[in-house]
Length: 436
Image 1 (tube, helix red, strand yellow):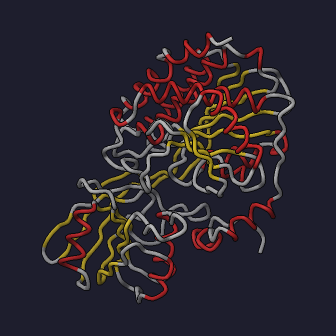
Image 2: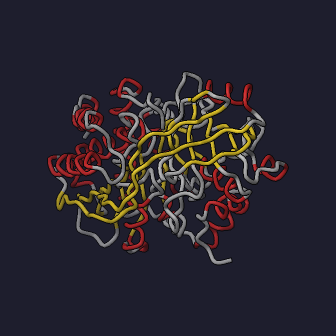
C-alpha cells in the first residue's frame, strides 16, 4: 500500500493552493484577503474529501497599516509599523540596547526614551527572546517608543505584532527597521532626540477558522493545524501559506488512507495567528481538551528539507516522530522544549499533547519571514511533497488505537516553563495563564 506515496510526491494539490493564497492581495487578520484565503482553504479541504468543511467566524481587534516614519536629526528614516502599535507619535532620546536581553533592560535607564533592540539573541544565550517580550520590557521600563531592528541583512524591515489578549493595542508606538537602518540610527543618533510616528486604522473586525474532518466518527480526535493569515507586507509564502498548503496536502493523502485511520482527524486552519493566536485561543476556549489525542501544527514548514518537531516534553510524540522519520529515512530534529509561539500553544499550555512542526534552516529567527521577502520562490515544491508524506504517515501513526499519548497537567507545563527560564518573559508579555 505505497501507491499513496507516489501520488503525494507528484501531487499539485498543496502547491496549487499555496499559489492561490500568495496571489491574494494580502491575508492580514480581519481583512477581505484573510476571509478569501479561509474560503479557498475550506473549499480545498472539501475537494480533498474531508466532510463538514466550514468556516467559524469570531471577532478580533482590527488594525490596518497606514504611514510610519522615524524623524531624526532633520532626516526621515525608513521603517514599518508593527501591527497593533497604537496610532500616535512619540519622541525621546534613542537608546540602542543591542540584543535587548533582560539584563540589558535592567541595567539601562529607558524611561521616556526610544528603545532599539535587535531581532536575535547572541549564541551564548540559552533561549530565544520573542519580539513581544522585548517590547514589554521596554513598556515596563517606561519607554516612549520601540524600534525593532532586523538582524538579517538586506534592507528588510521586520514586522510582527505587539499587544496582549487583555489589551490588543500596544502601549507605545512600535516600528521595525532593517539591519542597515538600525546600524545608521545607532551610529548617527544614539543618545539624540528622535520621533517615532505611526498611523494606523484601528477598528473592530472579523476573522475565521476553517474546520473539516476525516476518518471514523470517534470521540477522540487528532488535530492537523496551520494558520491562513499572514502579514500584509508580503505574500506570506513560508509564514504560513506553506503550513496551510501542508494541511491541504495531508488531507489529500489521507483521503486515500481513510480506511487506515482509527481515530477521527480534524483539520483546523486558524485565522488571526499573527496578532496573538486569537483564532486558536478561540478554538481552545470552546473545545473539549480531553477529546484531543494530539495536535500536529505546521507553522514554518517547507523552508528547508529537515523537519523540526518541538515536542513540549511529551516522550510519546518524540518517539512517534522518530519512528516515522526512520521509515522514510527523512532527516528530522526533535526538540523536547516548550515552544509557546504558535497555534498548538493554546492547547499545549493546558497539557494537551502537541507538536510545533517547522523546518530546520540552520538560521536563528524567522529568516525571510515577517519581511517583504517572504515570497513563493523561497519555498520548494519538493520539500512540500516530501514533508507531506512524512506528516501524513505521522498522523496515521498517532491515530492508531494502540498508540497512546498521555496528557500532562498544567502544573507540569508551568514547571517546565519555569525550568527553561521562559516564565518571566511570559509574565511580562501577559501570556502567563497559571495561578500564582
